[in-house]
Image 1 (cartoon, one colour):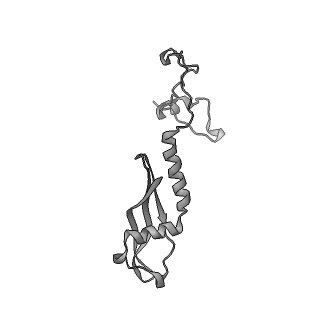
Image 2 (cartoon, one colour; image 1 turned 90 degrees about the vertical axis):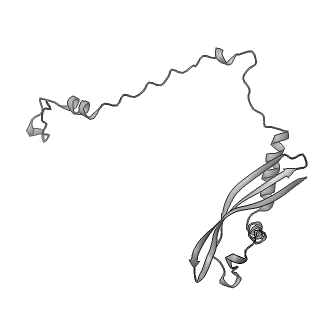
Image 3 (tube, helix red, strand yellow; image 1 turned 120 degrees about the vertical axis):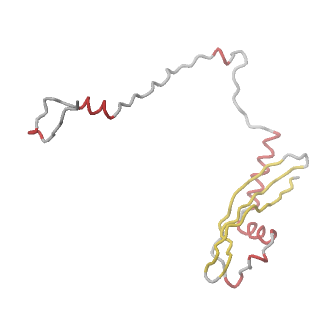
Length: 149
């Protein structure tokens, strides 16, 4: 059996909105799951709230963690989040299949098969100007070049 625990780490608020003050706009939350053996998993996320209903508005000073968690549970798919945490915990007992190096080949014996990538040489501005200068260019072709000395 897995026990799930919500935590609220921060509330981002608008100082005023539509005549209301300290309006909660974003809830930063985490949901932890822990099994009977103490193996646990955690999800951290945030939830942006829709515009508040002035008739059902809770003053910021009256909010409790239980109220905020009830907002999350009514807007998020808690069953799906529990499933994600249960799967994370299960992977501790049954890790996914992963490739391992062959036991008869030592890692230091492996020779890279690709040539190292050569570093690109970028010319300096002076080299570009010097290399681009063409003493045969005339003003008649629309390009005016001056020799740099």
